[in-house]
Image 1 (tube, one colour):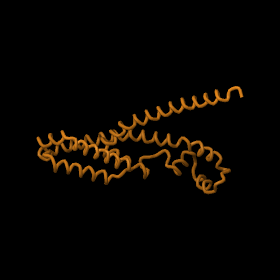
Image 2: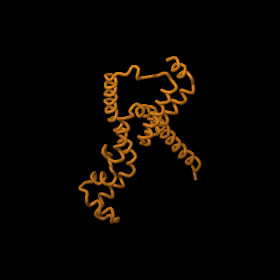
Image 3: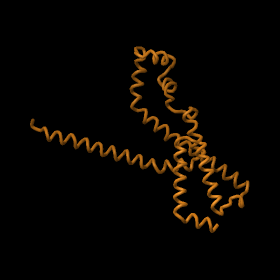
Image 4: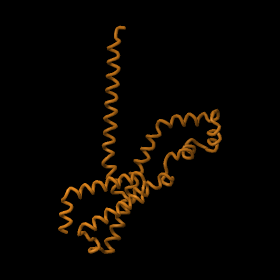
Length: 199
């Protein structure tokens, strides 16, 4: 235990831990389950190799099953708010295209693109068309979403920590940019008006 305490009090350990966490988050965001699991296994192996931490000395099946069940329950609970954030991001990203798709759907009888006309006639509603053509709104069984749900559930501590860290910064940055943009636009109009005033 003394070796472990001495090791975690040094800056190389914390540097290694930070590098490992950054690597895990990167693989997690890129949906690389094999690389995420391999890097975790390597890190745990290094900790076991260079410290006197021996978890099997205090291992018990009751604790393993209990903690494993708790981890699974928390992972399932975490998936719901994380999926909500994901869908909101997708909806926000689709805002600029929504009006164009809606206009083309409403005027599909006179649509100039025969490819779209043939495909869109197979759908009974605008929502069905978006699901068929764009996988919008995203569903948990979609090919590009199913892997995300699995990764969020399996690595919820890392995923949750990353969301809590970067989401507030992202929201603050968006707010700051919007505020500065409006102020600069107002300033630009004011300068031009004063420059050409009376001409």
